[in-house]
Image (cartoon, rainbow, N blue to C red; front, side):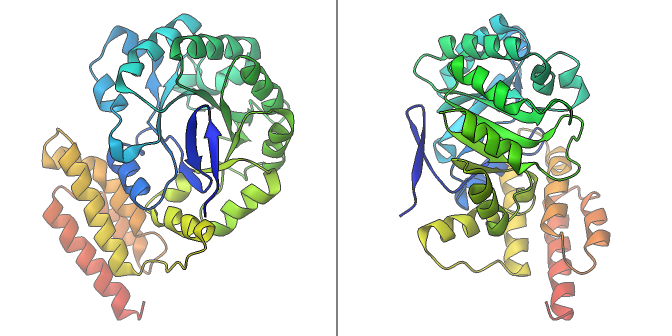
Length: 331
């Protein structure tokens, strides 16, 4: 039987969770990963200040469907008062958890003092966490951080203790500095140090792409839950592989035919959920289609063709052609 952990009052299976990824982990992506066994999912990040001033995209970003639970809504911001107001707004969508992003490395977020810029201001990070916790009431608040701003300031343990003291119910740690963005290797030692420093659950994130790397994260860091980001690109199956292991069940990896069936189903979900025209929604689906083809013969050429797709019919034809090519190679 799979073990569980508690984040606040929310029970989560101790298998693998889906990381929040802006521009990637939309509702279709989250639903696909949940279907394959993701224990927990997090929304794309939402600007705290943005939803205080405009609700134009709030419902699209913050709606939590039953099939996605347990699910967190992730907020980012640099001002405690706006974070508190934003939490109050998103509570109407009944998230299981509210997560605060203090790890995003992209300049447009960092330049506002939010995301991983908060790794440089532990006191402000604690104030933001405390404001969110007070506004959230019974809903647990978690914080996602990086190992530090740079290799000279690996302050994740200090940061984690500060947000724990401010009331955070768990902390997720991506084992890279802001300076690294997504290059190099994730530092498991930093995650281990955080686990040894705090009493709340620690979620380990970085370089997990299969069962072996998931088990390595658990065993090396002692973390309470593993979170998968880029390792899930075109690969919701990774959650099934990990869940099967912890349930003591057999797992068979998908063949190319199954991958193409799932890819097409993923595209259909994107089209069904999107309020845009088929052509515009296909623009969002292109990168997903390309990811499902990674690692196969001739995939570079086919991935390039994915970025020209403008209709579902074209995607069907391309998937059939791709599968036939693999069969002709005995794959």
